[in-house]
Image (cartoon, rainbow, N blue to C red; front, side, top):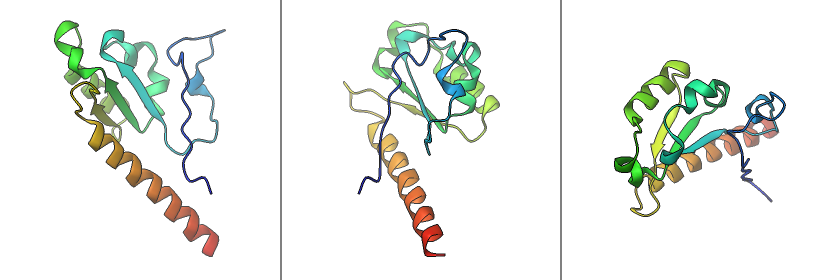
Length: 123
């Protein structure tokens, strides 16, 4: 039995024929927007739909923040103005930070979705 399926949309930042992948519901239960520090902190303003429809934002390559003009506090504040319930995770795989919190949040959300489905099936 498959309880979790992860789908990655490479090129999530690219608009093709004026359509953004965030405009399409592919049946997902949890939507996570991932952006990396080298991409810049202006993506919320450029692609607001992606972030208003997501439950969380993962800022990856966070260990590189000292090398880029990236204001993570401004990004988080802007994200919360657009979507008050959004969670922001700062993740660095090289320093192994933020990963545990992200996994814990994902597990909690997945388990909640499974429990809700089980409850629905029982009734």
